[in-house]
Length: 344
Ligand code: DAH
Image 1 (cartoon, helix red, strand yellow):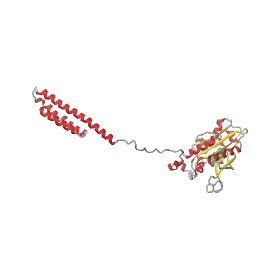
Image 2 (cartoon, rainbow, N blue to C red):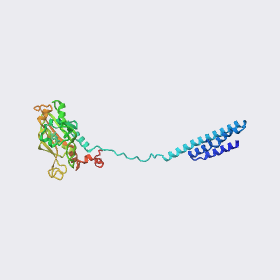
Image 3 (cartoon, rainbow, N blue to C red):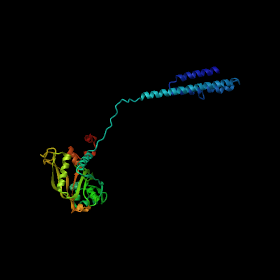
Image 4 (cartoon, protein in one colour):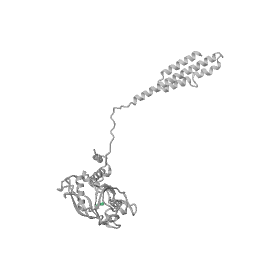
């Protein structure tokens, strides 16, 4: 019995020593220490031993079992450590590899143009005002001298939510809102950039959503020559020092007199070319002297105060400045288009 136990121990320890992985080790453990293993069998047969032999063999069988157990555990730890080592070696990170570049975005060209225009007018003493895109009929039309059923409302096909609520068709309502806030006291000197909406079919020069920048200056003794001076300054700072402007008579319900403002063509210097359709001039904005009725409706005494206003399309400015041939480029957001406007 003693020899058998010793032989079992040596055999088991030899197998533990050569076990290549955790699975092989488990097999050895089950084979020698399991319920059906030889050591359990020895312990079961103890009943047949003499009273003197029983404790001696029992003790020995327990020692053999413990010895195998301890070696199995040691070997298990060893194998686990080796497995981790191997995994670490396989997964090692090469910290010297160059990183993947992150694609940076750019400021949208329309935002850039708005900022440039703001810059130009801030330098002339204007501040920036804003108004809501969902507007009430009163500010979008009524307060601008466009009563209900006025034929000029047809010029601006609108998106209505209800009879009184619509997406603003221009930034002019911010004029009325700003004047109201000043409670009849000048000066009011603001530009108002923002999105506007019209029921147009989209094509190369029309978009149902676009941007405008409104300008308004109300004070005592504001004259048409002030309007001309301010716009000339703006044209030169936005398009270039060599540019000139000219005013042509026009009509807007909220201004009297009203003008259309042209800038001399930058492509041909005013000689006439494809871009200006041989005229030497390019139309850029609408403007005029604020209609006395508009001043009165927003709380200003039109015998004391006068003012000028203007409105321009941001996409149009951007298209002229950067020679862009289709307004839809601004809204389809092709990265190849946008990336050309990266500021450095
Ligand atoms: N609101 C006009 C439009 O959308 C543009 C405009 C013209 C604004 C003349 C003005 C102005 O303030 O004086 O067509």
